[in-house]
Length: 91
Image (cartoon, rainbow, N blue to C red):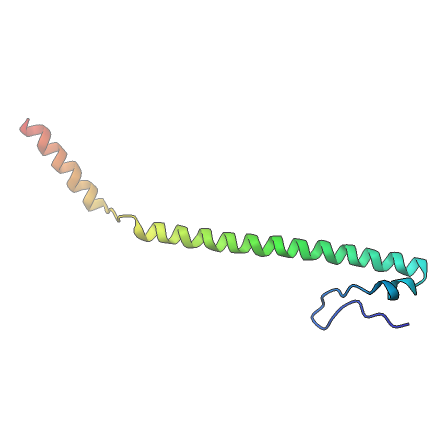
């Protein structure tokens, strides 16, 4: 009996109960282990994809915040300091 467990893209294809029933006990256990591993891999892949999306979203928000913040130069700081010093002198 030939049993295809993976499609052309490498995704696990769960055998039908009839196919599993025709397998010897040892092979049935191995197929179950493969199914468990494939399920865990799919779950981990989904988690990673969600994390990738969250990271790209966070990076986009960070870049937007950086672009939105006012740019302050040393010259601006010096002008503010000089203006505050002048204000104190004139008091």
